[in-house]
Each structure stands twice: as structure tokens, then as C-alpha cells.
Image 1: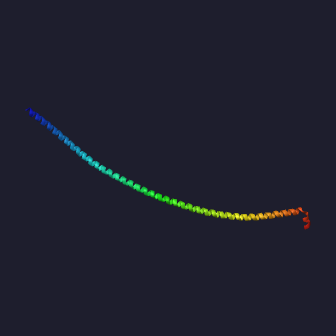
Image 2 (image 1 turned 30 degrees about the horizontal axis):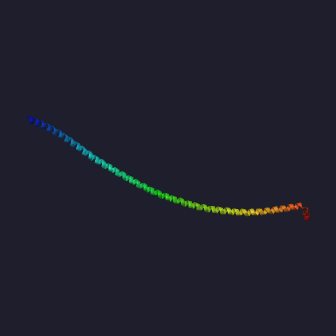
Image 3 (image 1 turned 90 degrees about the horizontal axis):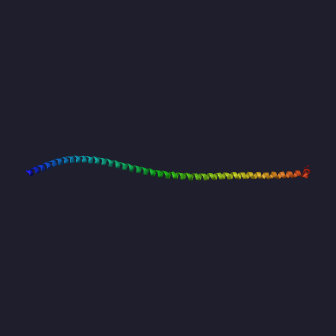
Length: 149
């Protein structure tokens, strides 16, 4: 009978182990269910994050395209402005050159007129000086007054 008691003890221990194993299995099932719920939740979060990342990438690409088009517009506007400035500079240089030529022609005309007037004045000066010399000589010479009288 001692064997029977040992067997009963072993059976009791096995039953206890089976109950503990069953409790462990129930806990594992609960843990697996929770892990499954967490996995589903994580998948949902991953999908949301992936969607946000895709939207951010699309936004970045849109911004890059916009910036590139603005840069091209800026380059075009800058070239046009540079062209306009060069055209205006050329126009102003030409206008300045024409104006300078007109002014120089006017100055030459005024100079020629002044030269003529000064020449005439110099001729009159020499005539007046000559007459003054003659009058002076005649006044100093008493013979001349006798001839006239």
C-alpha cells in the first residue's frame, strides 16, 4: 500500500500541477489576447504614421516644386530687369552723347560769334587809338594849326 499512497500522492501532485498549468494557460490566453489587441492597435498607429509621413513628403515635394518655380520666375525677372537696365543705360548714353554734341555745337557757335564781335571791337580799338595818336600829334605840332587857319 505504500506504493498506492505514493501513487495517490503523485496523482494529487499531478492534479495540482495540471490545475496550475491550466491557470497558466488561462493567463497565457489572456496575455495573448492583450498582445493581439496591442498588435492591432500598433498596426493602426503605424498606418496613421505612414499616412502622416506620406502627407509630409507630398507637402515637402509641393514646397520644393513651388520654390523651384519661384526661383525660375526670379531668374527670369532678374534677367528681364538686367536687360531693361542695359537698354536704358544705352539709351541714356546715346541721349547724353547727342546732348553733349548739341551743347558743344552751341558753344562753338557762341565762341565764333564772340570771336567776330571781339575782332570788330579790336579793329575799332586800333582805329580809335590811331585817331587818338593822330590827334595827339597834330595837337603837339603848331604848324598844323597854322595850316588849318
